[in-house]
Length: 271
Image (cartoon, rainbow, N blue to C red; front, side, top):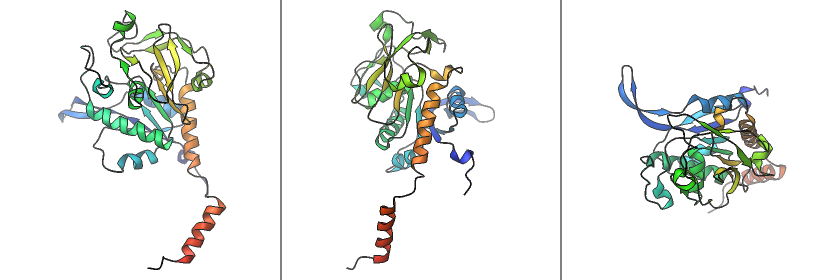
């Protein structure tokens, strides 16, 4: 049977956020948003993106959904609810988005359980850490004494980072990736269970984390989608997703096929 290139593209789910938006003809509505900058590197790397807006979680729904994905991206956005890591909100912390937090946490947990490649960016990295029992610095200027990580106005600052030797991240982008674009006022404090730091800024702020127990589970605090000249990270992620896709196409082993045939010939159990 001939398989087209399109049929071989791994399906990459990207979570979105619900916000009020004014539209022509419909007035103000709640709409799902995701900047196109997250889609372009996925498409360029050979993935097929689909959007996953927050929604009520029914029994078995998350397991079924993640089982249909070859990869999952949790992108940036508003701050994670500090109640999730046992803290009162700092005055500079955003108003909580509990529906989004719950939706994305459920997806993260299931992606880890099923070993579906997972890439978490900015807020996504922070939520990955919190989901695995870690905590956050709620306002970095209180910790390092300056606001260089978030220049404001939806702009990015560029900072150098140190990549952990031998990490999966180093394999994908090298030991000296150059300055990376950042826009965050929060960051990883205590690491979650099973996570390791994979990159730091000069201030020793954690800028990337990995979960080595899985094939590809990574959090990036900077914004790699803003680096169109370097798709190394996204290529590696989509390749891991393609491997997940292909693993589901592998034929069953002769032993398992024989067992199924014997079971069918035996007929239903007597009783």
